[in-house]
Amino acid sequence: MEVSSPAILVVEDEPMLRMTAVDLIESAGFIAIEAANADKALALLDQHQNVQLVFTDIQMPGSLDGLALAAHVRKTNPSVGIIVTSGLISPEPEALPERTAFLPKPYHEHHVMGLIRSMIA
Image 1 (tube, rainbow, N blue to C red):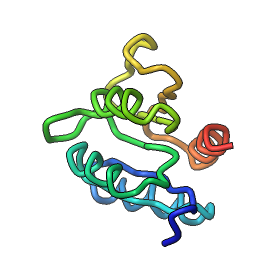
Image 2: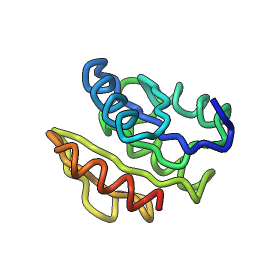
Image 3: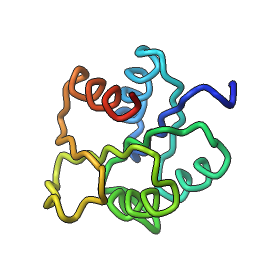
Image 4: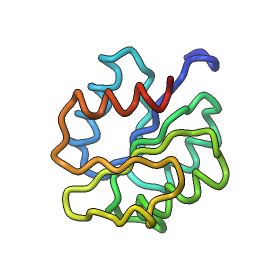
């Protein structure tokens, strides 16, 4: 993988949903990096300087949920785009870090890709 190629980090604990998101992102021509929880995602962010967007579920096991991960990413990597998603929680806008989009599940491919393209543009 080239360091200069933009990548999207997919953080989802449900394997089938993670695989679906990764397939969608790769079929659109982006590099997808996947993590099953926020702890793994943070380690991958340290390893991959080409991550331009984090696409994360809110509810997942581990030391951080998706909202805490989003807040950490915004603080440590302010230029990285963030999309949070959930089928169970609809966070209030003030609960989201600046420049973070919320996408409810089930989401449609064109909504996901439209948001990704607008955030990576």
